[in-house]
Image (cartoon, rainbow, N blue to C red; front, side, top):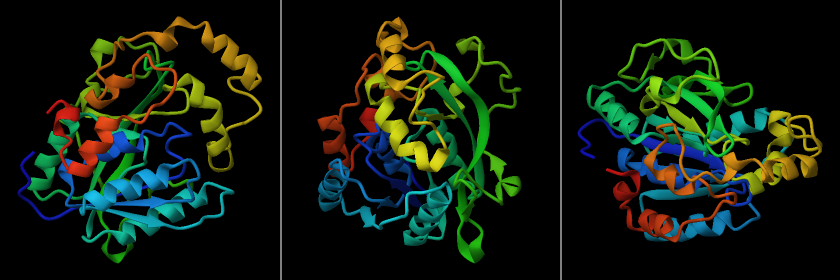
Length: 288
């Protein structure tokens, strides 16, 4: 991917990427070709995530790992950590993403063109799927992910989902169609390739879901006692007989790098993905 524009720092935050199946390494691979330096703030991982990150950063000098302990009690934690890692970037233009947000490879190229045009204040359409990427969970909604950080222009607030400057930013997309208003939309009727896939708690990796909910609980208010109204054990038993969780094909145009995971009920760290991050060569994994 050709880069001919002002430099951009990429920034994200994480805690327990492996245990929670947050797809951090997939999102890093997606962003690596489009940023000049990458900064990951580890918020206290205990599942081997930090060790993998240091292994990657030791080999790839464009990737920088930061660590800081946070009080894991409410959504403000995410906003604080997001703002802290934004301050770590080497450049004022910042691309921030949540660890489980995966840009489609076509959206990456649209964003690269915007960068070349000098646009560094952008929102993106984001959506969520569920049950192994088989159905729409959340309809498309806008998130602020690129801005100039000078003069406090890129600061996350509230639950850390957005900044107060979202209304000033332009949506990064090549489509002007009205986005779907119903979750039972026909997958082929929507240009998902212009959106971010948020690998939400019900999106994929059935067997990691309970652990993920426990990690999310203090921040998002997701119950650790029930999942969709059922005890976690009862939910898992029901999910294990739901054929959607083991289908090896999704009707949605999800990012290329995530297709490897379709049908897998447990999150696995790909050795070829870690190697590609270390070697700073991820385009093939993105289908580019």
